[in-house]
Length: 239
Image 1 (cartoon, rainbow, N blue to C red):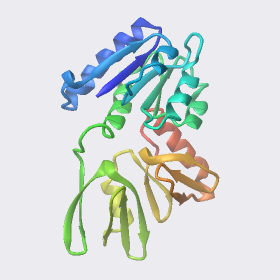
Image 2 (cartoon, rainbow, N blue to C red; image 1 turned 90 degrees about the vertical axis):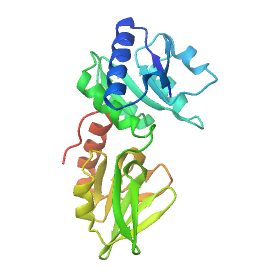
Image 3 (tube, rainbow, N blue to C red; image 1 turned 90 degrees about the horizontal axis):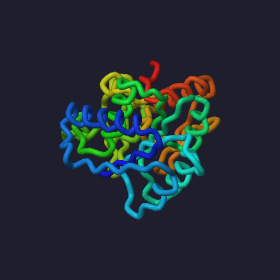
Image 4 (tube, one colour; image 1 turned 180 degrees about the horizontal axis):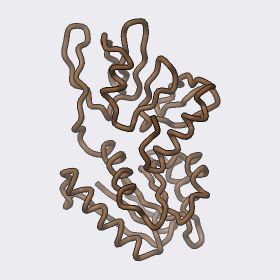
């Protein structure tokens, strides 16, 4: 796994390295498999021909800002996961618009760093959490990280992943309780969305990274925006 750290603060590099080691050990990741490269300016990062899986990117950089670098990286074909770092929260909504995957305020709080990393590493490492269901008289174990969204139709729930959709007699409310991982959001009475797959929250819809649109109730629009904003910033979403 290739990880980039782009900041001109040596103390931040040291702290992120230490925290990454802790997260890797606690989650069973082989530290020797982590290739970590360090940059002090955004231009050097963007000039790298080999892509990164995860980048920690300082916003307040000389010459090109981290926000502009993130915008360019997120527009690329194989966009990396990006966590922006800043001494202020004033850029959080701009980061949200770009589509970054996390936002940490300096000095970095270890608990928030760990929560953010664990949320992202589940997308980069083999799945460990499985959802066990019965569908059409067959039993399946579905990696939770692969679930894009679940919809309720009549008395059934349909679990959508990138490759398959599974019908189950489990109620959406029951699945919501089972999947209480901090990643799922009830945006409408009949839909449960994995926030890792949200591309954009619009006025009356949620756009997913696969191009699908899920209806969003206007009554809960502000609450949903707040939940997703908290999710991106590494906090546990509000219930």
